[in-house]
Amino acid sequence: MNNFDKWNKKKKILDKKDIDNLKIFFNKREIWWCAVGNNIGLEQNGKGENFERPVLIFKKFNKYVFLGIPLTTKEKNLKLPFYFKLTGAKIESIAVLSQIRLFSSKRLLREIETIKPELFKQLKNQLRIVEDL
Image (cartoon, rainbow, N blue to C red; front, side, top):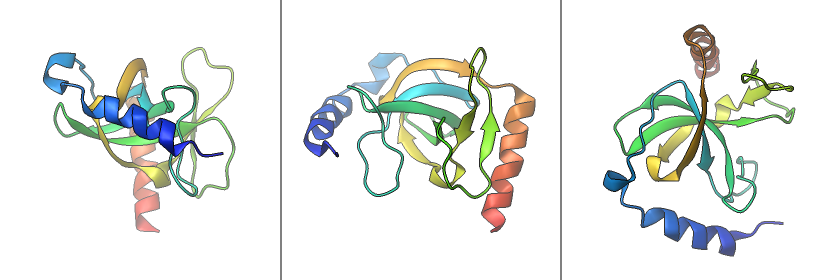
């Protein structure tokens, strides 16, 4: 069941954040818990009170916005999924490459970890394949 009203209240609070005073420092290759919200259709939803899910920072444009890839642990019917394991994780994560999008850094909640450069390069190559489809 979608809870759009609860998400809209959370979104209003996120929007009021003064990004210049938050002192959130993020970079590409980092995975953060991110308030992605309550979305529609097959778009990835956040979970819990903060409507959060892990997001990989693919490209940082500035301190305000970044291109991010939502992550999941549930097997889905995805074209060219990108599987990898987080440090210490028991199950694989899946980068949902088809749902790469622009995020405000106001949505960032807390950092999880940074993936290794070699793994990030493999992900970029996989994304190029998706782009060519």
